[in-house]
Image 1 (cartoon, one colour):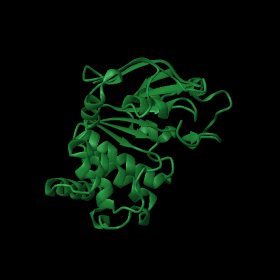
Image 2 (cartoon, rainbow, N blue to C red):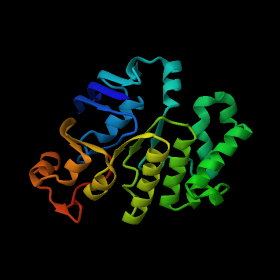
Image 3 (spheres, rainbow, N blue to C red):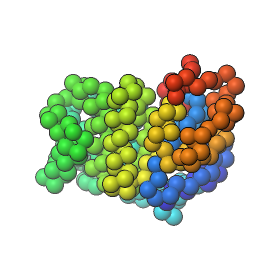
Image 4 (cartoon, rainbow, N blue to C red):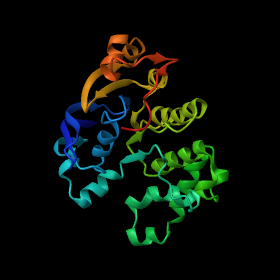
Length: 264
């Protein structure tokens, strides 16, 4: 179980990205975080694995405090936390298989990993992950030869070889068209259902949120302004919608009119 308690993040320039945020995520949930750009979604996800250092508060993973973990403890904890990025975060000039193998860095000798010396078991695991995502035939191509949807599946495969208990997905479909967006979320849903991997994902299109979320948190200006179950998000009122996105926001074809772009 993931527990976030009174989490606050203030950046060096004084920007308050998160303010006293508290929630829990039960094992096996598919929790989606919604909100405008700048609401704190990305900061929240990156605080969970300490890619961003929290200013105040606690983040507990299975009872262990991530916020106070020393480097060795944090490396061990991060093995259990996969991360998927909006812009894929791949090494473009490197082969697809090598990008996937970086998901094994937390388990191996760092120097050997830097030299691309992975075991036969690791390589078999990486190929199995690519096969599961339907792109095993792309293993020897450079990452930048792949389409956006294929690159994001490489990102999922990289997370999968970590053998994670939870995956954090930061706007994983923001740069993809609707058909590819559903394809990527279906892969995450499959891992959630068949492997029991908890998913915490930030999205901004309401139709996708309504389809995939088991529970929803809405952020506005770094504070939680909405909690909802799957049935509640599907019945979201215009008033609740505007509490999250502002009075000027309007629903258009399940998404939002105008301003909801990239990660926050």
